[in-house]
Length: 54
Image (cartoon, rainbow, N blue to C red; front, side, top):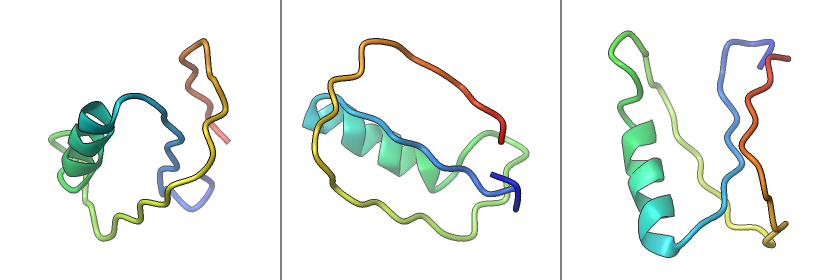
């Protein structure tokens, strides 16, 4: 995001999503994680994976 935060929108089975959320608390080696907010929303049926820089 423009403020250097990261927004992730993901769908999958519950176990995989929980692992992703857990990883977000640490992030990659040089990341400085100060906060993680997870919100459940409706399934959108994504068929592809995409990275965007805003």
